[in-house]
Structure formats: structure tokens, C-alpha cells
Image (tube, rainbow, N blue to C red):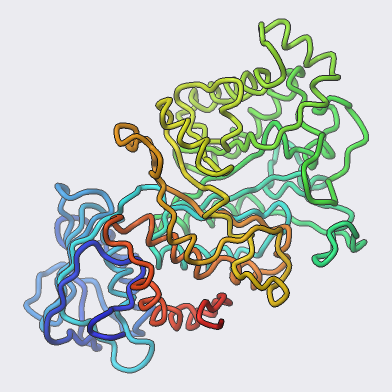
Length: 505
């Protein structure tokens, strides 16, 4: 780390360097004021793990060799001020999340080896957007809880604060639902998977598993300790073939379903004319809400073919009885019904931008993935939006032009610089930009059967995204980011991350 260009990612809003360093040693303590000492406990854990020092928490203010932490409620959420002198460190924050963000900044200043020390400086910092997300698809391939915890640790390091957990797919249902055991006894398993190098050929190997509710709750708590909210996704009305394999009466055909082996889009969707479907979904969502305490429940809503509905007598009766014009309005009716249920339990619905088709309830939030057009339209109509366009935020796309030297991917091309160029409010009327909650990177895992492959496709693109979502737009500079990234990559290596080296070519 040079004096001129500290290797901080994301870049703070304001940083002033000063002479000297603060050296941490076995006598260094952490003091918390303006709140419960427990508020500083996660911060202390981060610094203990990074330094190997005891760093005890004390209540009395001490004159020197101390990290002073204090809550100041008049400051913005997640914002913090940091002052480092040779004698002490002062960290002031608006809330516990701000203390944690400030601690992550301190953590990035620590050298990889040698004496633990912070450079003397002052920082004033806070996020540009409140939704700074990373998505992981565990429907196509799933990964052990240890890897998910590692991912959350990396998110915390980069001040990302929303983990979108894509739990259900045509190819597998991944969350235990106690009231519907067939979802994991049957729906969690498929007979085979496509070969990575030839998606039209199946490998003949049974694949599957799932996360127990105890594992999910443990992950939720682990995330909350790092001020990360997990947003669960239960797909509907499409991407439901694994659920239909478990309970065939929920589909328009009523029989003949298996968890899908091939990738791509299935015609098999929940039957919108069958009241039993909504009994099922509401029961499932009650269990989901008991595990995940966050504000948002993601219901998918994307890529829902209408062919089964067009031929289904029950769906056609529903269209007539509800006075709907077509199957697009039937999907809108479906989403509105689920939204009323979620709202009645104090939650907000979020879905992919297809939920705009046929009309959308005012309180629904749109996650825009098919470029930015859906998000722009939604924000213009007064809906809250999370921007996640495939043009900039799909980390399953190739990151190098030379595909022959890269592992198989779904296609596309999103290099590091394009991620860094992402602006969630581009093209949106300034009067409507407040509806943009933030942005998110998406990791779809058809071609990522291992954790190492997920990391290779995710990092450092997720680091670039983290900076675009945290740092004020006028300060963003890709050349400067690359300079800092050279110093940041050894941190990732030190945590055993199988990142893609952007300096390799």
C-alpha cells in the first residue's frame, strides 16, 4: 500500500492522509461509548481475527493505545468518521452498521504481514446506495454452508449488504419446508446435469441436496452479525418444475413432472387457476418468513411461459372470472395476490422486471435484469427499483474476450471495466432517482459446479461493483481503481479466494 494510493476498496468519500502510524500491540484496547459495549463486539471480532491480538473491550475511556468507538444518532445510517493518530483511533458512526463499515476500512489498512498498524488519517464516509447486493443461484448447483459464510465475509469486507439467495429452480428446490417434505425428498434431486462443455449432453449422475431450516437460520444470523440482510427467493409462477415434481397437482397438467435436467426455460409453471397453488405458496412463504426476518421476499416472476395457461381450462376460467384480458394479466393477477399475502404479514414483494407485464401493484419493488429499461420504467411509474442489468451485473458472463482460455460460461461478455462503469441511476429522471434503492451483481451457476468456479467468476468483479454502489459518482475513476486493486488482490489471496486476475493479460 503506497502513501499516495491506499488500497481501499471501496474508496471512501473523503480521506486525508497525515504523518505517522498507530501501532497495535498486546496492550491495545477497544472502548465503546454512546451505546452498549455489545455494539462494538462484532468490530472487535473482525480486528482480533485480522491481527491475532486480544483487543479487550473496556468501558472506561482511556487516554492512549485505544480504539475509541462511539455512536452518534444524528449521523446517517452506515455512515462513519474515522480519525487515526499515533496515540489512538477514533471511530464515530450513526449506527452499528456504520461502526462495522468503519471497522472494515481499518481492516483493509492492516498489512498482510509484519507489525499491525494503521496509517494516520481522517476519513468521512458513507454509502451512495442502501442496497448493495450480491446474488447466488443455488438451484442449478449448490454449495456448502462454509462457502456461503466465506462469501458473506467477503461481502462484508467490501461493504456489500444484501445477499440474494436464489433457493428454488426448475432444476432443484434447496430449502427445507417442513409442511411440504416432498420438496426436498423429491424436488431437491435431478437425474443428471448437462456437461459443462456440451450443454446438450447429460452426465447421467444424480445431483442434489438442500439446506435445512437450521442451516438457513444459522446463515441468517451469521449475515446479520455482519450487517448483511439475506433476501430469499422462492420462484413463481415459473421456474417451478422441481416443485411440480414434488407435488404434481400444482401444475396445469397434474402429472408427469421431474426436476429438470437441462438448463433453459421450462413450460411447466404453477397453475394460476388452481386455488391449491395459493394454499401451497402461502404455507411455504409462512415458513420462509419465519426463517428470514428481512423486509423483502423475492418471488422471481421471470421467464414464465404462458403455453400451459393458454391450454388450461382452470386458467381460462380464472381469466374470465377475474375480467382479465390475457395470460399476461393473469400473471399480474397472480403476483398481486401473492403480494397482498406478503403485505399482510409485514413484508414487501420484490421480483424480476417481468412482473411489470400486465400491470403491477404500487408497493411492489422491481429488480431490473433485462438491461436497464425495466428499471427506468418502474422508477418512472413510482416503484422502488434495484438495478441489476445483465449488461453490467451478470457475473456468469465471460470476463475475458479470449473465451478459449476461460472456463465454460453461459455466454455474454462483462469485463471488469464494464462492471465499474455501471451507474444505477443512468437514464432516470432526477426527480425519480430516489426510487433506485441500489444495485446488485448476479451469479447464475449453470456452469459453476464448484465453489472455486463461483469465486473465479465473482471476484474481483464484485469488488468493482461494490465501489460503484458505495462511492459517490464524481469520485469514480477506473484507472485509480485498478491501482488500488493491485494492492487489494493480495487480501483476497490471503483469504484463499480463487479470483480472476485482471492483470494476467
